Image (cartoon, rainbow over all chains, first blue to last red; front, side, top):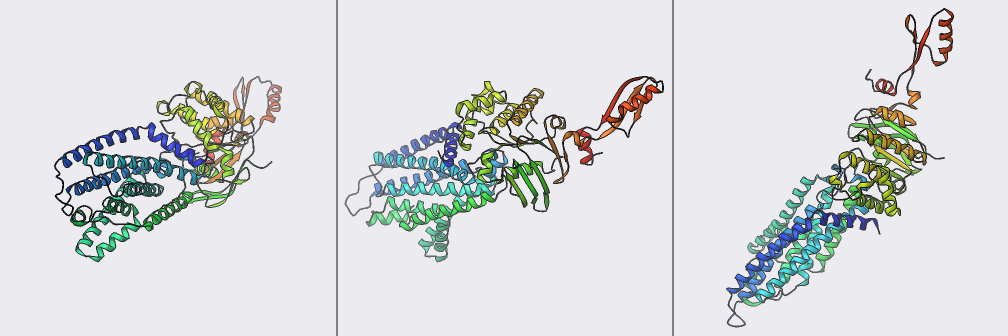
Length: 283
Length: 278
């Protein structure tokens, strides 16, 4: 078994043994129960449209609920990613946990890769699971299904993997608490930039749109989330499409293969930077 | 035979602070070298450079001829840090298994059981680290350092949390390790322990080696005391070889000799002198 896999397995076992996964799953069940209740109550109030050109309340309700659940999923995934990785290097080194592992022939690169892989697998599986559950709940209780199912889910998975990578990188330079705060602030900054872009687009303010665009390149998890949102109602047109885009989906942006390529390159860049910094760090 | 560990003109600076300055040292296979020095003398830094945790600012450090920190060097060492901690959710057996995986050891359950027995934790294989006393964790740390049959053992204060029985266990263990041809670099504040177990001692002060040699070489003769019927007579400038002549002179002069004591300074005296405390 390669060294990175040993470390990844160790990280996964830690998450299970420390009951991180158990606690997260229990609280997630509460969230999904609440979400199901919201769907039930909302869809009970909805009447069918009178004709094909009339506004379809069911689409607005379904897309809005699922869009909000995606935001919550991204947030919960980010929390999990940060807490699994915030002390991966400096935090563990300060506590004396890292040194016995680093002196083994495993090497620093494998150690970093293993810690990242362990956290990424847990977060990706978690986010994929909640997203799938939310889609099923919305579809079964509201008889509404998103136009694209796979794309938004993959976008969420990629977004939390990016956040885990940012947190691993931060853990090389910052203490655990400082790193946790920094990553959450970056997360907030990314979301705020998305909202600014939304406002800029509505008011035609070029500066705000530029800020949002640059931010989405620097912090691609926001762009992945927006692309996922867009996928939910990608084929909705007519009056319903106009109203949906006036609401919470105003910021949703279609993204092509470029975003995925950039996300992959971004992860590689973070990895190279993290490796370089970790190799030079005295422990 | 090449040195198990060797460093030449080793330097380490943290900004304006110099942790090591021009350190030359060599540990032969099967040799037990004690590193002594006050807090901040550079003992831990030297040990960390040897195992690749810290990069030297200048100079060269090698483990069995390979640059310290290289995969070859790391494959040859076992290390116990002064301030170590193990994941508290692992059992003793699981911790050793993890280190077997990381070091590529094929020793399996047999090696784990043998090492736990060696450090007196044979009954604690399924005990979690969180349920262990500091002393038990330190013993487990020594077992962990021995996973994969290292050829160079780097121990930084390995007995600081142990009770006298635990220290005795470790002392015996170090003797056994040495007899297997493993080189040991032992950093410690316990001078009596170092004096008993180490073949050679190096005293670090302010990042420099200020004294080195065997414990016997570091202790200097301090004369001879002779207890006679007239009281104790001191001969400060003589050595052990002069004792027969002194006794013969006293007896020839009609005196009675009850006891002769050859005086030598201890390692503690040598240490205190080296660090400027006397």
